[in-house]
Image (cartoon, rainbow, N blue to C red; front, side, top):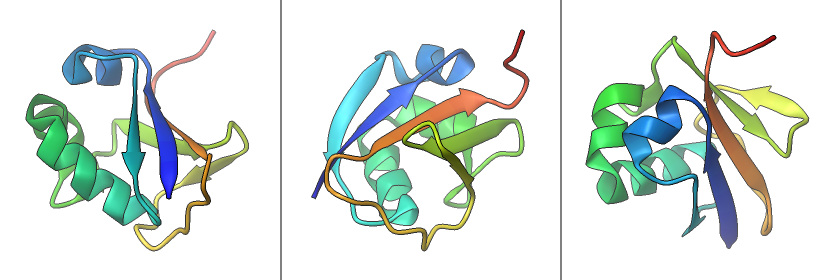
Length: 87
C-alpha cells in the first residue's frame, strides 16, 4: 500500500527531501520505514519510534495523529511538520 509522506519546515530540512513515497499500512510502519530510509530525519524527529513532541503528523490534511496503530489507506498523504508552524 503506497502512501506519500510530505515534510515541512525542520522535518523537511532533516529529511533532505520534500516528499517520499513509501509502503506502509499504519503510522507506526510508516515511521519504521522512514527511520530506515532517512536516518538523519529519524535522529531529529523520532524518539523510540514515536514523533518527538516538537513534531506533528497529519493524514490527508484532515486529522492529526499520534497513534502508531492508526491505519493508513492506499494513496494517503502523511504530513510531518514542526509543532510550532503557523501564521
